[in-house]
Image 1: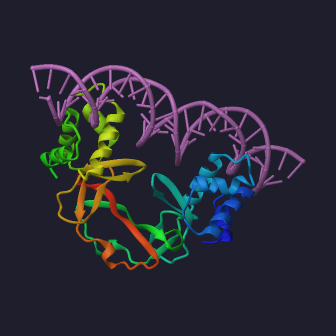
Image 2: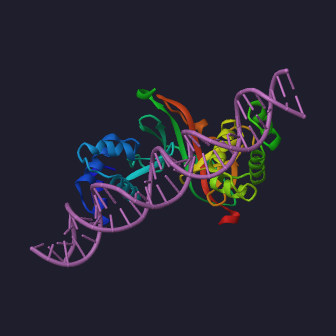
Image 3: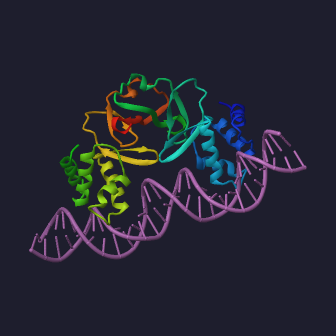
Length: 134
Length: 134
DNA sequence: CTAATATTAAGAATGGTTCCGATTTACTGT
DNA sequence: ACAGTAAATCGGAACCATTCTTAATATTAG
């Protein structure tokens, strides 16, 4: 995923192009790690002082629905990151301090057999602290 | 984990015995599945009409710290269940409707190698709907 | 350019959870 | 059994992240 991919996904789905959306995408493209809505807002307040929570949340959720962002819940707060360029299904090691991730290629689901359950989803995440945050 | 185990853990740690705590524990002992605080409150309101959220949340959190309950976050809400009697480290298949679980003995961590990360925790959960809730 | 439609700001509302002060209750030692 | 004290509870306010509402503004398609 990169910015121009994201912009064409938006266009293809009838969403409008705005400077705020571009800045949001640029932020995620540069950071490549999990960010909370609050962190995103703080990053953007300098350029858009009147920016509202709603704009952030609405766009984060639109982007997530379109597959531009991935989200996960860390400590009661939603966090978002640019969808990984890593090909195929994978999981993450996540730094609880800065949100940086490392990809794990193996998926435990391949080894699990569950009867009498209609499986809809699964979550495998490893938490810790990266080199810089330790 | 059973009720008398739980009561002695409470006693050993200087917590007091109350009827509400016993009812809470009885509820979890009977249900053996993930329940939200709201669900717990509803179950207990019939016996204790004036029961406050605070009492529920405080006790759920005390019990969790003592290892009497396990908790997980489902759809933005904390859910709690009696600590599994299943021996050793394990994971769960969880019904998103009723909170019923099935244990998974294998842990994906055994096959994962992560360098430059101080691992503190991990989460592997499978979500779906059980037989009765499908 | 214009109409149609999406986006936005600002703040109010929501839902889950935690905090607070006052009161009640359970345990301890006598 | 009883008083003292520490913990538990109630009731409601406060809190935080998130979502909704309304009116105004900006973008796109034609």
